[in-house]
Image 1 (cartoon, protein in one colour):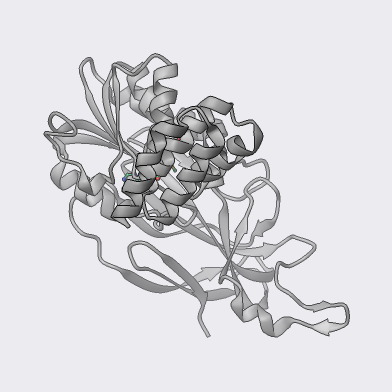
Image 2: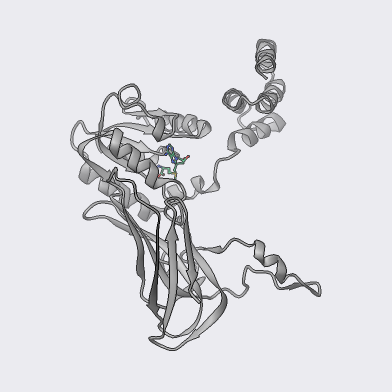
Length: 351
Ligand SMILES: C[S@@+](CC[C@H](N)C(=O)[O-])C[C@H]1O[C@@H](n2cnc3c(N)ncnc32)[C@H](O)[C@@H]1O
């Protein structure tokens, strides 16, 4: 493979002004296992073509591979952005050194720089790190924001950061709070990369749950199609369903309960946990348990995506459907269980 990559590299000078040839080499670089070089070529072709023509579209295909579509949604969540920016402004002092985990578009890093900090921000994905560098430069913050293309656990506090950070900011929180690896990343960063008494934003994340009724006309589960019963296929469905917050897809049928709450400012390793508990119903049909997230940015700032009328959020809630709906009267108790394994969450109704 190394020979193949060397052969492909040797061809580059002969085709340096031919976007179609360059993108063909980029595709072969991927097949040969050299994604970083393929990405660099795709960026070159994108710049040459402006994304036009077959070569431009192929470059976009290579650059976007593995980049989640939510990168184009989260920067539009005004409440999220404002909650982070206000917390950053409350924490940043002249000369503050901010470490961000997970650059994405560079938005939070630029907010910290706008508030007066020097920022090092790390991004595990090379295409995203490179695009974020361009965003930062285009906004005039290249002298205050350094984008490092590394996973946070590979950062060296001296070589990559020039010293320990006074403030850690991250938004590596998935719909279920945990599956983007927020616990492991924060535990490592607090232990190795932060000055004593550093501020951590968000300071805490909480998984909240409530009994819920599905208000959608059509369940996402299969029943019959063209006269055939497809229900046996449902065992392949994910155990939770994505609920768009603000679309009135579910009604909450109990008061919310904090299932698990996590201190993001500790180096102490959180162990997996499991609990079962009763929730008192408001009454009526219960289809499952809905889970959402609450972030405590700092002692003042809070963000929650509770799925209720009028809400809006870039994060979805998750509905864990019961095997069959449960009919309840007001104040009936339903026993539910919840567990996390540090980077995944599971909810169920107890028999
Ligand atoms: C949800 S986006 C947040 C983007 C931006 N910070 C914002 O809030 O708008 C999270 C980004 O962090 C990156 N990421 C997640 N965990 C990381 C880690 N431990 N180290 C480096 N990058 C990470 C992902 O690749 C993704 O681009």
